[in-house]
Length: 208
Image 1 (cartoon, rainbow, N blue to C red):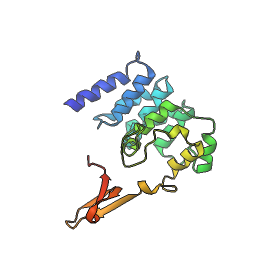
Image 2 (image 1 turned 90 degrees about the horizontal axis):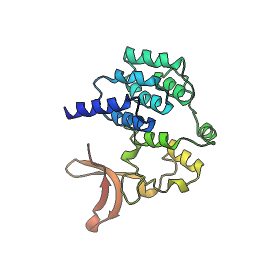
Image 3 (image 1 turned 45 degrees about the horizontal axis):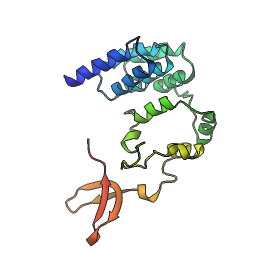
Image 4 (image 1 turned 120 degrees about the horizontal axis):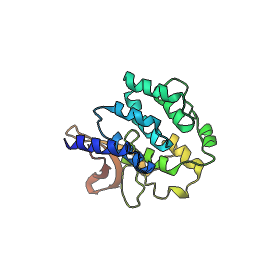
């Protein structure tokens, strides 16, 4: 019941024509983490006049693209969409004509003129990609991946390379280890330091 109430509240906020586009987009991101009982209700938001609001439902609806109502709604919206929204719709339909870059070089060219920080932040926190489960943007918080608190000091090309091919330049301290105990239990995490007697202190991700 609590989950249903949360879903209805977030949906009402996302559909509120008087609400700010940023607020509506945040509500849609929160909805993406819910097990929606009727995901097709998001289809109407594909026609929102604010591009940020129209893009967010696509990230959730593409997980339900097998549904005829959802597929038809996305196909219909493609007739008038352009820019990033059109690219997201094509990606959702998986037509084999994905407009996004396909190599590191073409990504660098596409991103040479900058980006949209708000959209990037929402992608970072979306449950589909789960970037925030391993990385933090707050200094002093230890997760399984390196902190991104100082990422603004990095070179753009290095950031693109790290996002697309994260294993190419993986610092030793962030290499994952798997420890198998005598009891047959396996633990995956980061090695923090060695303890006396050959023991290893590890940071492991808690199960959800």
